[in-house]
Image (cartoon, rainbow, N blue to C red; front, side):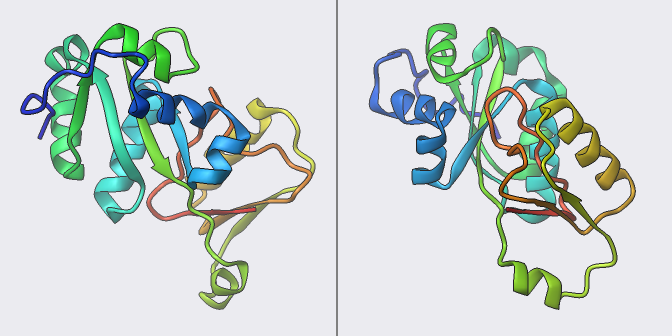
Length: 178
């Protein structure tokens, strides 16, 4: 399921483009409840999580060249049952914070209530307290996912996983609380 049915988004000043670009700001993410996932690897993982839960992604944007050259992403989009909207390079550049992402996605923030999370009797929870370096936070997130953690908790003093360029989409089995 790709976006070839809809016209290519070509206006970098369109309201939808501006709305996606606002996700690069903390205020934009907080107001919308969404964050931006940039680049093939991050979008690949988000699509896999969405295919398993149906609750991760809101939308996907990619260039026609990227969609046409990647059978892997065509299959992932079909599995996730989410269409990709085709955009020009200029529109993608206006939406994204990275230089050449090729593909981006808008994801829902997954912040379940802490009490509900604890009531679900999780077996393993990773807690990030005062972790300031996004590289360290990413390493801990990947290790928690590999270990089968049911959740990752960020304290208020910790770096957030939804800042631009460092997005680490949660796996289908983990939740991220703040």
